[in-house]
Length: 185
Image (cartoon, rainbow, N blue to C red; front, side, top):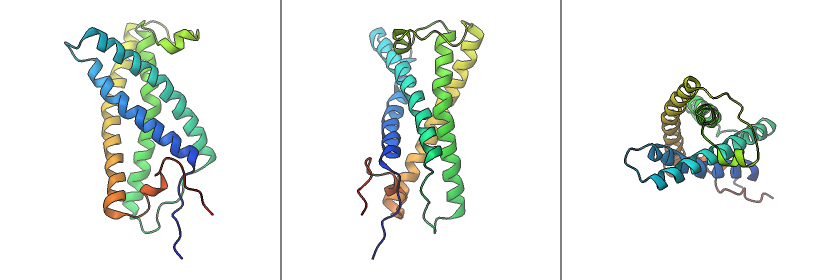
């Protein structure tokens, strides 16, 4: 009798895949929206998209973190080399950290710079930071370098997932795929 590897539940999978889609959309939008010579209406649409999806990502990463504290990750395969376990742990820690820091830095950059975040403004949420060019510049730097780090960590994460799914076929990828957990008997 074969045993099905233990995987994440549906809630964790839906957090993962919805955030993956949003992050993979906001990274290129963020890099594109600051390009010189871009059509102004497209640039404005990208800024609005990027800022408001950032708010949604912040809400999702906090909810996901709470969920993860209540339901720890399923165990990795017993035969997985120790260095891979350590790299996986570091990568996941970096992802969680960057997925929290990026929207916070983006929020501070936008609000300290005196710009709107349309969804938050629409619900009447006052700015949580003062108007400050120096604070906006510091947050912009954190957001820019964080974006480079996030893109690198996402690439590492996707590469490792594909390696486990296609080459190793060791059950690591199936812990998170498909997006809805299969019914277990």
